Length: 247
Ligand SMILES: [Zn+2]
Image 1 (tube, helix red, strand yellow):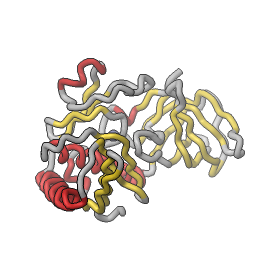
Image 2 (image 1 turned 180 degrees about the horizontal axis):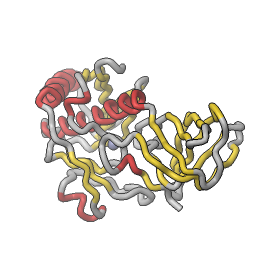
Image 3 (image 1 turned 180 degrees about the vertical axis):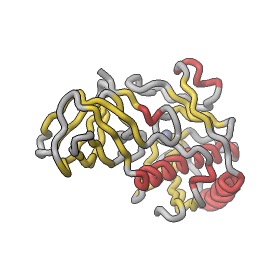
Image 4 (image 1 turned 60 degrees about the vertical axis):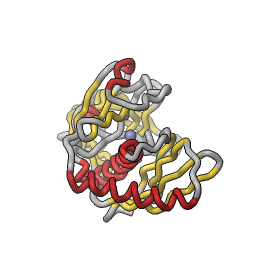
């Protein structure tokens, strides 16, 4: 059965209570724990997985090193024991490493903010893939521009993005059928995963994002953004960015 994803429900869910459903040994001799629900974000959508601790009240402590979502919507918490051992049916407490989560959330939100600015600047670009890792943060668009245009747009995106960040916002989480997403989202991807609830995060009350990742509650929390590079090649324009204090 699919794992209930508690981090989807609110912006700052970093702990939850859960029950152990199954425990397996992985090929590399680590332990793979499946719970009935989890606040750990699995890698996906260009955002990295959470790390943290799963513990019970008899002293077992499991270090979550890697989190994966499988095709059935089951989340696998892969890692090693620091003390004791967990058993199937154990009641456990999940605690996400807040510092790492915050970095991933700010980087991921910064990528969506770039999308929002692209729309505000009325650039006719369609967003493609993105990566929001500390060592590599970019968003790709289906567009081709000249190096001169790239230089001008780089400055514009950075300026408008930092204006939006300085002003702040009230972001909101909504769940809705995929068929209704177009009412708040300009682009609804055709490949929205069906193994997660259809979720839209509304930035600044106007910009709807179909996304199951973790997001800042207010764009102000992203911190200052720098557009480090815009490169256009073979119909793809790649906007690389950095967030102050992270990368
Ligand atoms: Zn996203």
